[in-house]
Length: 158
Image (tube, rainbow, N blue to C red):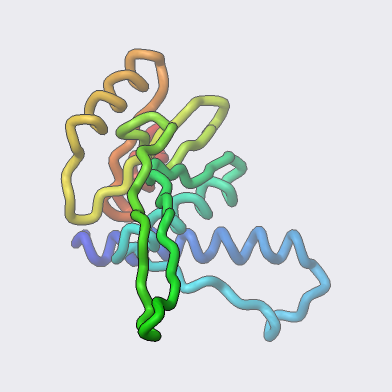
């Protein structure tokens, strides 16, 4: 089976799982009023949403983690005596207080800690490799997902 066909089948499986859970959650809702999210794994955000929804719909717990720092803005605008708008001060990014290299998704699947790194086109940084090593040494599971079908194959082998 080709990669595209395999991936579309995996996304269909996710959509079907969503429909099943939606029918159980809202049994009196008529079929014509039901909608299914348009799942796509072509972008990092799309793949992350697919993975989190699948884990939650399968009875696990999953959340997106962010290691982005914080933007600290001390700039002030004022109008000078000639009527021109001026800006003084500075702005900068402050490093995160989280662990550098953390995975994109933190989950608990069947009682086990699972960290999932979403990689569409890029590669793991050195910090991410160190984080993966630390998770695996501690007995956790670390998955690198490049597509939804890739994730689903690794999920089914847990």
